[in-house]
Image (cartoon, rainbow over all chains, first blue to last red; front, top):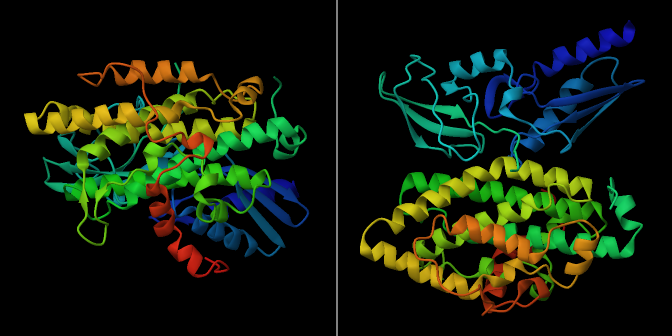
Length: 166
Length: 271
C-alpha cells in the first residue's frame, strides 16, 4: 500500500512539471513518461522523447529530476530517455489538449497519414475555415496556421504517428 | 541472425562490431554534413517562411545525426561531440554529394548559393534516407532498429517539404525547370556513392544489418522517378569518388573547418 501511495505521489509531481516550450502542459500529460521504478529511496524514470532534435529535452530531464528529488522521501532520481517506446501525438491526454488550446495551440489531428496534408480547427473560435501557413513552426513539434473565420494566427501540434513500412 | 540487444553483446563479435560501426558512421556523417549545409542557409532562404521551415528541418536532422553518433558512443567509439567535430576528412563516411558547397561565396560574405542545387539535393537525399532507414528497421541490432523507426516518424515531414519544392519548381517557368534539370543531371554524376555500403558491405549484409546495394538503389529509383519529369539516362555515377571509402573533396575540408571552429577554440568547454 505504501508503495502504491508513492507512485501516486510521483505521478502528482510529474503532472506539475511543464514542458518549457508549452507552459501549463505537463510532461505527464504530453505522454512522455514511460516507466517509473522505485528502489528504496531511489526513483528511476524512463521517458520517451517527443522530437529527437528537440533542444528542450535536456531542460525537461533536469526539471523532472529536480521536482522528484524535492519530495522528502526521495534521495535521488535518475531520468533517462528511451527509444524502445515511440512517442506519438496519440499519447497526449485530453487534459493537455484543452490546455494547449488556451495557449492558441490546437491539438494534433487524428487519423493522420505520414507525409500527407492535414488540417485542424481554430483553437480560439472552433472554425474549420483555417489554412496551413507553415508545417514547420517555432519548435519541431508545432506548425503555424491561420484562421480565416476569426482572423487569428495560431499554432498546432504536428501529428507524429507510428511509421508503417509497406 | 539473432537479435543483438546491447552494445556489450555487439562488441563480443569483432566483425559484427566493425560492420555496425561503419554503418553508423555513414548514417551519422550523412545527416551531419547535410544539416551543416542546411544551416549555412539560415537567414538566406528565398522567403521568411522557408527560413523557418528549412532551419527546423536542419535542427531536426542534426538531432538525428546526434542520435547516430550517440549509438557509436555507446559502442565505445568515443564522445559524440568529438566524433562529429574532431574526425579528419579521410575518416568521414558521408556521401560526397552531401558535402558539396551550396554555391559560391560564404554565408557571411556574398553567398551566391543555388536554390536549385538545394532543392534537388535535399529531395534526392531525403528519399535515400527513407529507403536506407526502412532497410534497417528490422536489422539485427535492436538499438539501431529502434532509432531508425523513431527517425522515420519525423522524416516524412522533411521529405514532403522537399518533394513539394521540387514539383513546384519543375512545373514553374522554363528557367526554373531548366535549373532543376541541370542539377538533376549533375546529381546523376555525383550521388552514386550514397548507395555504396563501403568496405564492410558484405559483413553488414551477413550480419543482418541492411539490405544489399541493388535493393536500396531500386527502391530509391522507383520513388524518385514518380516525381522527376525527365529522368537522366544511365546509372548514377561517382564522379567525385566514394565517401563510404573515405574519398572526399576539398568541400569537406571547407565544411569541417567552419563547423569545428567553436569546438576547436576550447575542446574542454562544458556546455
